[in-house]
Image (cartoon, rainbow, N blue to C red; front, side, top):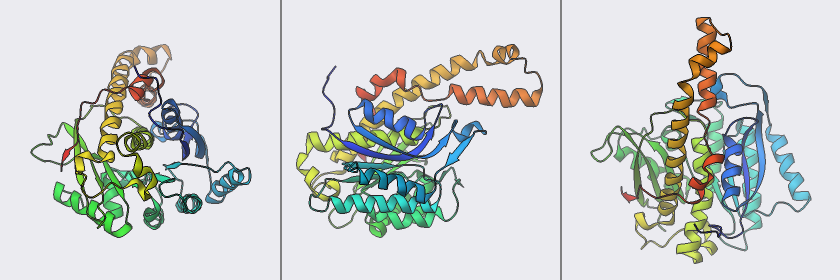
Length: 356
């Protein structure tokens, strides 16, 4: 196995949620990026006992002013030198605006050195047709997208940001093109795409990505992979963290001159499937598929013993038993990341980018 780090020394500001127990938000992002050799500064937007999928938790959310104050603390001590920024869950429009201010300042600092700052933005707002943030978060994100280098919306979030209803591969293409044109976002990956298509069986999911050309046209690729019949939390956080590293790695190894170009955009002559974005996504999905498969195996094994465990706990009532079963299942479904760190470092690539 290779021992060198996949990227040169890279300092990342990670702005996302934090949980005491479990693996979501910055809890997973920091581990993943540090395991791959990045120096990560974690700015936590919430401090919860556990993720909200348990349906019960304790903790607090940070305000937009508090978020900015923490960044000011870094700045006053000369600790705000960052090559990349990853932003995930932000608790409200004010927090989105504060993160935008941080990105603008870091971009301004890098103005004399093109390509020296890169923002990966995961616009966490909802999924499966349901918004789980306040309505004013959407317009706040729309104001910030033009400052990001790479955005990672899921299918529902892409609909919200593009104002295009995604019902087919054609409308998905239209949504990506709309975001390139409207927000000038250089790189886009839409995660967890589930649409009927001849080469996309219903037992599969896909990611669809694009790096725009110099004229703002989409260069589309897709990667189809088998769905795993389990529900997980934290997959978006893991995807974003790994994309930070693998995008920088793909640029460093295949086109290092792009590190000195705004937003690391490839020449128009580069085909979609040969883009650094596509190469990075292949590696990210390889790691994720391995970790999720191993997590699902562990979940199945633990849940076979759940009934006996509830009996030992003395939980007998139907309502109490159903609640306890859900809590046990939520705990068993936490991503098995620490024990499978080699899947992050040395993934076996099985799913390749193909033309859209």
